[in-house]
Length: 94
Image (cartoon, rainbow, N blue to C red; front, side, top):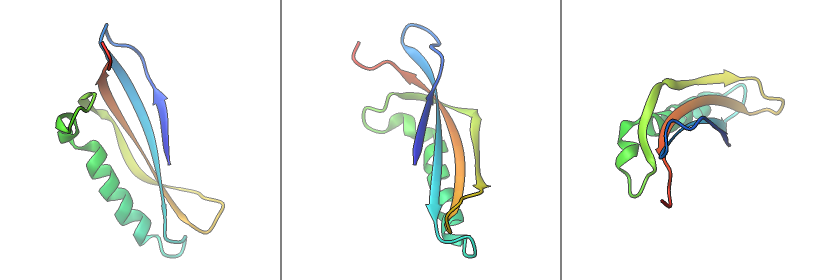
């Protein structure tokens, strides 16, 4: 699950974007699948290399905005891990 928290405009072409990501896997008693998958997702999202992928609008990963993954209580019998990532992005279509 991905949540876009958006963010402020930094200048004419650049915006700050915050994204929250939940990973649900395994069970509460067996949270290893959630931990493993969440670490892989975090590694991909936090990687500075994301700026050079295809036509990515991401110009910079804001390290202060990269947090987690953290365990989060879940009402169903699944393990949930949550993380946030913050990017500076360029406006597309100009």
